[in-house]
Image 1 (cartoon, rainbow, N blue to C red):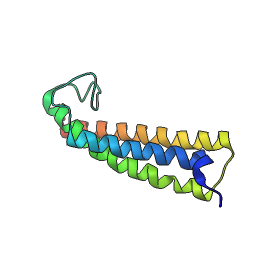
Image 2 (spheres, one colour; image 1 turned 135 degrees about the vertical axis):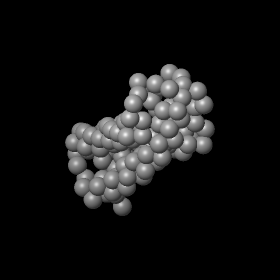
Image 3 (cartoon, one colour; image 1 turned 90 degrees about the vertical axis):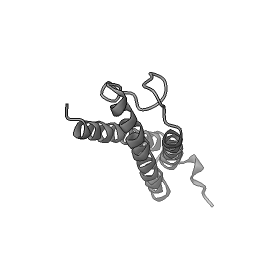
Image 4 (cartoon, rainbow, N blue to C red; image 1 turned 45 degrees about the vertical axis):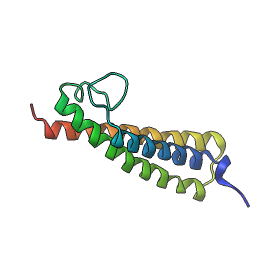
Length: 117
């Protein structure tokens, strides 16, 4: 039996997806109350005022849970395809980076659509 734990195309998306979902859940249950530079979804548009801050924290945590589930689901590719170590690492990290960029784009677009000033 060949376990997928040495396949980075499985390991990186599954572990980072679980971390995304866990972080999203923690942010959803314990959102940062005030604008700060330490904890939460921090961009110049989300930190402009308290109303934007509150919206962006809730929206980003929900999106992080969804995209974390999608990233975890994409680890199935690691079970189907078994690339060499460096290629698997590159593909796994690429999937993770795409999800981070996609998260930022979706949240910034939602902020822009909700607050048109």
